[in-house]
Amino acid sequence: MILSFLAWSPLIFGLGILAMPRGDGKGLRWASLAASFLNLALAAFLLTRFEGGKAGMQFEEIRAWLPSWGIKYHLGVDGISIYLLVLNAVLTPIAILCSWNAVTEKVKEFHFLILMLQTAVYGVFLSLDGFLFYLFWEASLIPMYFLVGVWGGERRVYATLKFVLYTLGGSLLMLLAMLKLAFIAKEQTQAFSFSLSTWKSLSLSADAQSWLFVAFFLAFAVKVPLFPLHTWLPDAHVEAPTAGSVLLAGVLLKLGSYGLMRFAVPIFPDAAVLFQRPVMVLALISVIYGAAMVMVQSDLKKMVAYTSVSHMGICVLGIFSLNLPGQQGALLTMINHGISTGALFLIVGIFYERIHTRDLSLYGGAVLKMPVLGLLFLPVALSSMGVPGTNGFVNELLVLRGVFRFNPWTGAFAATALVLGAAYMLRLTQKVMYGPLASHKMEELTDLRPREIVTLGAMVILIFVLGVFPGLVLNSSEAAVNAGLLDLLRSGPSGI
Image 1 (cartoon, rainbow, N blue to C red):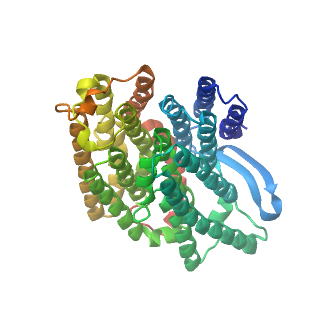
Image 2: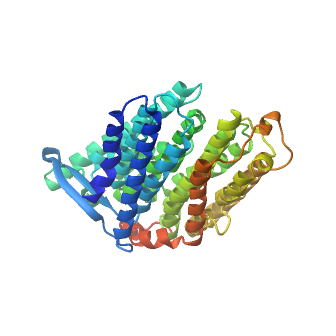
């Protein structure tokens, strides 16, 4: 039952935190941090027991839940989900640490919601029953809604409503498609089923595949987010507290790309091939549009938010290349984006705590006042640019290889967009860190505190570890990704 312990322990600890005295802010913080580190230790133990190279699910748990509807409590982990679980476990204590001094009101509720969100994300990555997946998917909305809506900026109500309405609209389509699949399973197997393995084996007409694929795709595309369904993301990031931005960029966006990889493509292989080119076009637009929007922003946090639109577009390009290097690159992009962009939001939060502005025109010369931050900022920027030796290099190389195999012209456009990525990160680095002090606010800067060195330093270590040893992820995921592509072989997509 290790998966159940991993998934539910944050929520159980969170309920314990709710029972603690409200006035003990320091105790609440330490209890929440201890709970997150215990969960991280459990995730690390799971990783050591995981057998890399196996295609099937491991540590499966199957229990009847609503047998008349074929709904089961079914959990499992494979090479696609194992490192996403670890990413969730790593980012949660970092989110708690970066809020140590920033959150001073409703401390108990804040930390409960962080741990509740961790459980919901685990559930999405572990669920092998469609109904269970949907419940965890919707549950992830609740803590993020309150994290942004209560501890966010001045326009937090607008941002949260936009975020929830976009996500709920897509989720409703997915729920209807899931119910349709359950009824089709009833027709073909004489029993309702929400099992992912059963759905993969159903005989679906071309029209049915197309409509159902579109419903799933829209739900996941909103969460990625993919152009033109991305407009909620910059608002949510700008208004969210630092911890909310770290978790939103680090794990919440991955729910959409994971859903595409785990559900939409393998269940509807013919439709995935049919819509391959339109989706690739949308992903390419996201990559280029996101990079272009970064270049014209004056709000530091909004700049980082639009980098996510661009990077997650690269992820979707890899998934819909429908070949092994592209999809492995997409999986590595999910993990690496969570680390590098999460680190960028940490840095923005560090600046904002000190000078209370994100106006880029007031930034400049920060390295003169914060040499330690300057030392740690550089590898984060290099990672976002995809420089060799950092974690961002290998995933971009694999995605480009997969996209070029699909279509050389698409690959060429994608490579051009990566040049834009280097341009905006160099501009950001030069403007913020170097040159003379740009304003009186920069005079108020103080260098990193020990807690901040620990959180940001941990991210930098991960940047170099995955940059030098990408095989940690690639070797574990290859068999699982190959298994997911088997159903596509009969549809004959390009490049397999």
